[in-house]
Length: 340
Image (cartoon, rainbow, N blue to C red; front, side, top):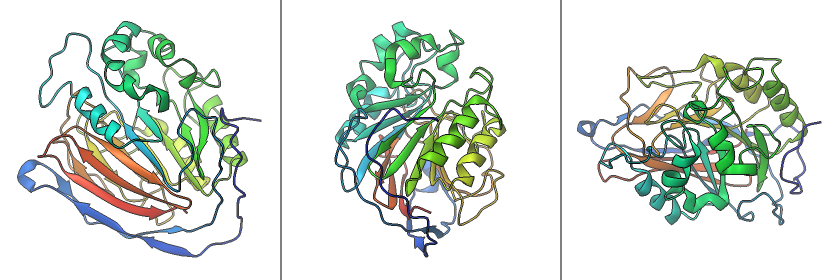
């Protein structure tokens, strides 16, 4: 059977039907002249449940709190020798913002180090910025980590066992009452790909069966859904998203598109449903900012005017989010929901 790298005692799973309650969503957007776009906020019912909070920790993140603060972002550090500007190489500003939030864990959403994920650049640039939070970072690889090596050698060497606790680039662990799952969405190079029946998909399905926590969050690089103009939605990860949806996962975090976007809960086919997964795109770690195309179905909030980080408060049976821009011209987004 699959195992996680964290032996923290798990809360009991409550299999009984639960009443649904509505998630309150609050959205604040900058003026339209700043380029932020806000859709209508849909009220999303999710299931409430009760759990106990573990009091021990061996996972490499801070001990459990009543609500654990998590910071998430991807597409972070420029290559050595690159110049900093308002629209490029903002990794120092984003990490200082993240440090002020004092996160229990940092979830990096791929493309930690440009342009080729080589160890020299990791040591020169990423380490000087986001390396300040290395002790609580739980990474996942992006396509740039594979640019110089089909094994993501620089990424593996820099992060060590934090990136491959099971000798694979996908793994899971516990934080409070939440089960967190880091996946590898580089389907063309990860052994077996991402389709149903692949080693990663089979591991994911088994991991979800054997870790029935009240709340679950998964993160990887390529977004299943995105209104971004350069890359857009990735159908290649549809089976991973569907596996998570079938198991009742609550949140998916991604990067790849260098902008911020939040979606209403939906299934793997993009059909809005109160029982779906809420997906975020947080490709605002500092490398650069990308334009949007037309907003796709279920996109609720999007902005590409500032770098920034996503803060999540993971409670016993609920979560809240807040996007923090580094620029005063950036847009803010915050809200909350309950686990289903």
